[in-house]
Length: 295
Image: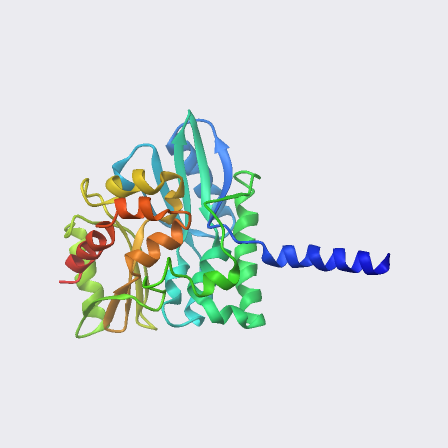
């Protein structure tokens, strides 16, 4: 009998360790209009020590909205990861109006951290800090709703750390190199100026600039009706709206972005190849828009 119990306990623990991590958590279904829902979320975030750094309606849709937030603790932690860790410093809340209700979701910080920090998550101290930040964000969102319902597929922590869509597809460590400037400040000024003028049919959603460490992240909306969010989101799934906006990162003099065939797949892990081929041009379209910002 003891042996049976032991085997049962082992199998239960094994299944727990095998559980996947979902990219999104649905936290609430709110009544009312989009503006009211957004105000409620932003109020909860501020009350819990977060800074709202951006908001926009992807694709110009009145049924979609995103709020971007962070705080000094998140930025400091992501900076410690080095590499392109600051890409994870912008946390996102998505809003989708459907059937008369506003579905509120968040991009799961734990999912993002495993994907972007990869082997650093093998360090117990680093992992503990990452999961504490994730837990704090999830606790904060209980002020909006208590669903905490995972969706969007799931991947194990092991698979997230080495994620790519399929053989031959890019990894996190295969970024697109956009430009190299004469200095960090020249890069910041050029990107800000081009965003202000809407070059490449883009718009600025947020920026995180750390002049001391020469790192800047820009979250960029893609309003082009033919090549931007209005084109690809209805095809691959608007419920994943907290994946947006897309971002570029300036480190010292170099600007890079995550490859579209990595970033789209990571944020929509359930995409079939049939659906993926319907947005085959989108990674290149996004890259062209971002390249316009660095000229």
